[in-house]
Image (tube, rainbow, N blue to C red):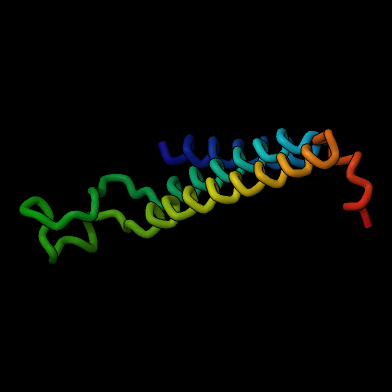
Length: 118
């Protein structure tokens, strides 16, 4: 099961990077970066998964003495939750920039933005 999640995550990353590098439309590039971000989150969750372990809740079923061998480390899950929030903020900021560029230039084709070139 973990291998399927890892393969799916890496596939999403590759699809996202391919879309970001091959598209000229700014909105499609933003969607591609968002897909790559989702793939990274899936990979982190898949790496943090440990088969046969339970949630990190100490109660009658899991004592404090058995916690190291029976619970999953919650840090990858917390990192992914934080990454999701940051990803939504970055995507919103990219969409605002794309909207402002469309207002000024009337297009979202990045080849039309000559002043952005070096």
